[in-house]
Length: 470
Image (cartoon, one colour):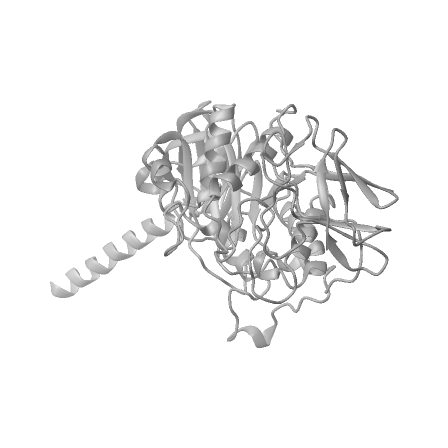
């Protein structure tokens, strides 16, 4: 009798185990409360029992899609999404049904980088986010959804990561990226459609860990991990953050990506100027959905206390923004803090990224999205005249003096210049330079930018020379 009970118990366990294996499983990027990109062919994938037929039914059109899992149980289906709306449900079945509820259709953005993107609305220890308490208190919005990817690293591309889609409210926003939240809040209000924000960041990291192995074919100075790296790698090792925190969602339908990183690469601006477009092209190639929008923040001024002037990195970021199509840079020259590398004004960062998206990706072509950009330098004796693009209604300092212009002659020595705003642009000179050949604006490690257009968007630091970086 006992033997029969034992056999029966084993059979029950076997059946339960079989049933568990047969159940459809989805990676974390798919879940209740998620947002799917509107009006596109959106991929949904997961695992099931080997060779089992998997069926997906979407509530917005009552349409069903089916495929057969492969011999390892992997499957993938493409569903057609409607115009923005919801909430909807999605049922997925291989004999046992899994239902995703409270699904919205709208605009989805991946938000990544290092600590300034990772910085939550609650801030860091002794480093607040300006206006965070009010922003958190008023954050309830059923049309915004958030997912934060848990920090992880891997030498091999992973199939899944840890994270959970949450509704936007005071209970979730405090622990979410402040820059990403302010971006999402603005575009949701401006477009009146649901918005999904995916935050995948790690403080202090360089750009190289966020690129896949295939992205380094043109960057031979980067040492990729090899057999000797297995027992000795960190979050700074090339490819390891892409593998663990980006690869599991590659193929998930998105509108575009946001990026806030660069501080950790500040000593290598010439490499960064190539790596930044390289990252964008790499992600676009991995996703395989065309040249999706990619907008990023220029690092804010900060007193690094030595080393290479970080203005060269800001210059590299500016140059990268014109290197390939469908990109843009949000300038933060006015938000830096001398001894805090994480500016408290994250709303400025999020809002300026949103201006880029609204103007360049959502058709608001009358909206200003960039600060003044140097167009031409004309030397007239000892006087220099500068004209600017992106200043249709002129320039302003909002009442401050122009203190950050410098001019140099052929001896390459820069002196502070007296600068004034004119109808045509800016005129400047210095009694120390009778034959000027070069101008620099705010080209210092720590500086507070004072030059804006009438929309209140700041000019990036810039130089007209190409003299040796040192």
